[in-house]
Image (cartoon, rainbow, N blue to C red; front, side):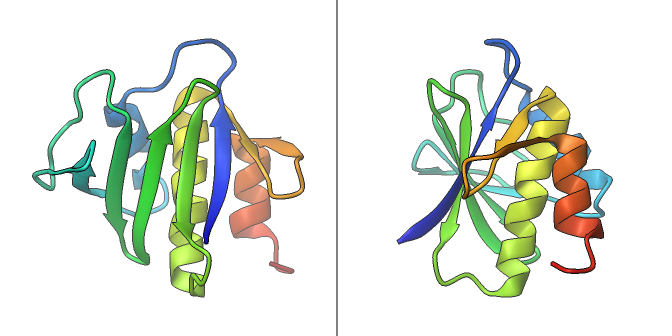
Length: 126
């Protein structure tokens, strides 16, 4: 079973992969594209517009990003260790920051990119 968060965008416009990748730099993380739409990809490959699923490698492990009619879903394995959970947080934040989106949490609440970053990376209780 996986863990999933959805990032919703204020309009039908979604961020480009290049803008998401740039957002990761703020966190000193470099996403490596592993698969695009279930096909192997070159690490620096840029997905064509209209992609449906990306799998990216990060320092903590693999994160899946799925384009849906509602937004983009970020998915990891349910038994994720803390490093993979941090990579998941980084992915959710990078997407929300690039597209001015909102991250929907497990409890149904949604946070702006800045609110999510504070919760995920700055909150000492987490």
